[in-house]
Image (tube, rainbow, N blue to C red):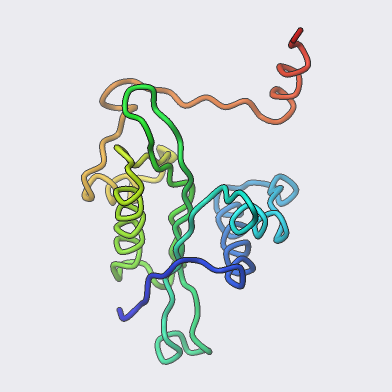
Length: 172
Protein backbone atom coordinates (compact mmCIF):
# COMPACT_ATOMS: atom_id res chain seq x y z
CA UNK A 1 0.00 0.00 0.00
CA UNK A 2 1.40 3.33 -1.07
CA UNK A 3 0.59 5.55 1.90
CA UNK A 4 2.34 8.59 3.26
CA UNK A 5 2.92 8.91 7.00
CA UNK A 6 3.09 12.57 7.89
CA UNK A 7 2.55 14.88 10.85
CA UNK A 8 -1.05 15.79 11.51
CA UNK A 9 -2.03 19.37 10.68
CA UNK A 10 -4.81 21.57 12.04
CA UNK A 11 -6.80 20.79 8.88
CA UNK A 12 -6.66 17.07 9.73
CA UNK A 13 -8.35 17.50 13.12
CA UNK A 14 -11.83 17.09 11.66
CA UNK A 15 -10.94 13.63 10.33
CA UNK A 16 -9.15 12.70 13.58
CA UNK A 17 -12.27 13.64 15.56
CA UNK A 18 -14.36 11.48 13.23
CA UNK A 19 -11.98 8.56 13.89
CA UNK A 20 -12.14 9.17 17.66
CA UNK A 21 -15.93 8.91 17.46
CA UNK A 22 -15.65 5.70 15.41
CA UNK A 23 -13.38 4.20 18.07
CA UNK A 24 -15.83 5.25 20.80
CA UNK A 25 -18.67 3.44 18.99
CA UNK A 26 -16.49 0.34 18.71
CA UNK A 27 -15.84 0.46 22.46
CA UNK A 28 -19.54 1.14 23.14
CA UNK A 29 -18.77 4.51 24.69
CA UNK A 30 -21.89 6.71 24.70
CA UNK A 31 -21.42 9.74 22.39
CA UNK A 32 -22.02 12.09 25.31
CA UNK A 33 -18.87 10.74 27.00
CA UNK A 34 -16.64 11.86 24.12
CA UNK A 35 -15.69 15.25 25.56
CA UNK A 36 -13.16 16.25 22.91
CA UNK A 37 -14.50 18.76 20.41
CA UNK A 38 -12.92 20.01 17.22
CA UNK A 39 -11.90 23.23 18.96
CA UNK A 40 -10.31 21.36 21.88
CA UNK A 41 -8.49 18.99 19.54
CA UNK A 42 -7.08 21.92 17.59
CA UNK A 43 -6.05 23.88 20.68
CA UNK A 44 -4.55 20.89 22.46
CA UNK A 45 -2.57 19.81 19.42
CA UNK A 46 -1.60 23.10 17.84
CA UNK A 47 -2.04 25.81 20.47
CA UNK A 48 0.57 27.57 22.56
CA UNK A 49 1.28 24.43 24.63
CA UNK A 50 0.65 21.32 22.49
CA UNK A 51 -0.52 18.35 24.55
CA UNK A 52 -0.13 15.62 21.96
CA UNK A 53 1.70 14.52 18.82
CA UNK A 54 -0.18 12.97 15.94
CA UNK A 55 0.79 11.35 12.66
CA UNK A 56 -1.61 10.39 9.91
CA UNK A 57 -1.56 7.77 7.18
CA UNK A 58 -2.74 9.28 3.92
CA UNK A 59 -3.47 7.49 0.67
CA UNK A 60 -3.39 9.04 -2.79
CA UNK A 61 -6.75 9.48 -4.56
CA UNK A 62 -6.40 6.45 -6.85
CA UNK A 63 -6.23 4.13 -3.81
CA UNK A 64 -9.28 5.39 -1.93
CA UNK A 65 -11.88 5.83 -4.67
CA UNK A 66 -12.32 9.42 -3.55
CA UNK A 67 -10.13 12.48 -3.46
CA UNK A 68 -7.48 10.73 -1.41
CA UNK A 69 -7.53 10.80 2.28
CA UNK A 70 -6.47 9.93 5.73
CA UNK A 71 -7.10 6.28 6.60
CA UNK A 72 -5.42 6.08 10.00
CA UNK A 73 -3.56 7.91 12.72
CA UNK A 74 -1.45 7.52 15.83
CA UNK A 75 -1.94 10.03 18.65
CA UNK A 76 0.49 10.18 21.56
CA UNK A 77 1.65 12.32 24.44
CA UNK A 78 4.53 12.29 26.89
CA UNK A 79 4.47 10.74 30.32
CA UNK A 80 7.20 10.46 32.88
CA UNK A 81 8.51 7.42 34.73
CA UNK A 82 10.45 7.85 37.95
CA UNK A 83 12.50 4.82 36.85
CA UNK A 84 12.89 5.42 33.13
CA UNK A 85 12.39 9.15 32.54
CA UNK A 86 10.44 10.43 29.57
CA UNK A 87 8.03 8.01 27.85
CA UNK A 88 5.76 8.24 24.87
CA UNK A 89 2.21 7.12 25.62
CA UNK A 90 0.21 6.08 22.56
CA UNK A 91 -3.44 6.83 23.25
CA UNK A 92 -4.80 5.84 19.85
CA UNK A 93 -3.46 3.80 16.96
CA UNK A 94 -6.24 3.47 14.42
CA UNK A 95 -6.57 2.32 10.84
CA UNK A 96 -9.97 2.21 9.16
CA UNK A 97 -11.15 -1.42 8.96
CA UNK A 98 -11.11 -1.61 5.15
CA UNK A 99 -7.40 -0.65 5.12
CA UNK A 100 -6.16 -3.02 7.83
CA UNK A 101 -3.71 -5.78 7.05
CA UNK A 102 -1.72 -3.56 4.69
CA UNK A 103 1.11 -2.54 7.06
CA UNK A 104 -0.38 0.92 7.70
CA UNK A 105 -0.63 0.42 11.48
CA UNK A 106 2.93 -0.90 11.52
CA UNK A 107 4.17 2.18 9.71
CA UNK A 108 2.27 4.47 12.09
CA UNK A 109 3.68 2.82 15.23
CA UNK A 110 7.16 2.91 13.69
CA UNK A 111 6.75 6.66 13.12
CA UNK A 112 5.67 7.13 16.74
CA UNK A 113 8.73 5.10 17.84
CA UNK A 114 11.01 7.28 15.73
CA UNK A 115 9.52 10.41 17.31
CA UNK A 116 9.94 8.90 20.79
CA UNK A 117 13.61 8.10 20.20
CA UNK A 118 14.24 11.53 18.68
CA UNK A 119 12.75 13.18 21.80
CA UNK A 120 14.79 11.11 24.24
CA UNK A 121 12.12 8.67 25.40
CA UNK A 122 13.13 5.44 27.05
CA UNK A 123 9.83 3.64 26.47
CA UNK A 124 6.65 3.61 24.43
CA UNK A 125 3.56 2.66 26.39
CA UNK A 126 0.05 1.78 25.27
CA UNK A 127 -3.01 0.27 26.92
CA UNK A 128 -5.07 -2.33 25.09
CA UNK A 129 -8.34 -3.90 26.20
CA UNK A 130 -7.82 -7.58 26.99
CA UNK A 131 -10.48 -8.59 24.47
CA UNK A 132 -8.44 -6.96 21.66
CA UNK A 133 -6.26 -10.01 21.05
CA UNK A 134 -5.32 -9.03 17.47
CA UNK A 135 -4.00 -5.69 18.70
CA UNK A 136 -2.08 -7.34 21.53
CA UNK A 137 -0.53 -9.74 19.03
CA UNK A 138 0.37 -6.83 16.77
CA UNK A 139 2.22 -5.02 19.57
CA UNK A 140 3.92 -8.22 20.68
CA UNK A 141 5.23 -8.68 17.12
CA UNK A 142 6.66 -5.15 17.33
CA UNK A 143 8.55 -6.09 20.51
CA UNK A 144 5.95 -5.00 23.06
CA UNK A 145 5.41 -6.81 26.36
CA UNK A 146 2.08 -7.28 28.15
CA UNK A 147 2.89 -5.96 31.63
CA UNK A 148 -0.38 -7.26 33.03
CA UNK A 149 0.59 -10.81 32.10
CA UNK A 150 4.29 -10.40 32.84
CA UNK A 151 4.31 -8.30 36.02
CA UNK A 152 0.69 -8.15 37.18
CA UNK A 153 0.22 -4.40 36.68
CA UNK A 154 -3.33 -3.04 36.80
CA UNK A 155 -4.46 0.22 35.26
CA UNK A 156 -6.58 2.55 37.38
CA UNK A 157 -8.17 5.85 36.56
CA UNK A 158 -10.35 8.36 38.33
CA UNK A 159 -13.20 9.60 36.18
CA UNK A 160 -14.04 13.27 36.25
CA UNK A 161 -16.54 13.08 39.14
CA UNK A 162 -14.11 11.10 41.33
CA UNK A 163 -11.28 13.42 40.36
CA UNK A 164 -13.31 16.48 41.35
CA UNK A 165 -14.34 14.91 44.69
CA UNK A 166 -10.72 14.06 45.45
CA UNK A 167 -9.55 17.56 44.55
CA UNK A 168 -12.31 19.13 46.67
CA UNK A 169 -11.11 17.25 49.77
CA UNK A 170 -7.75 19.00 49.62
CA UNK A 171 -7.05 21.29 52.56
CA UNK A 172 -4.28 23.16 50.77
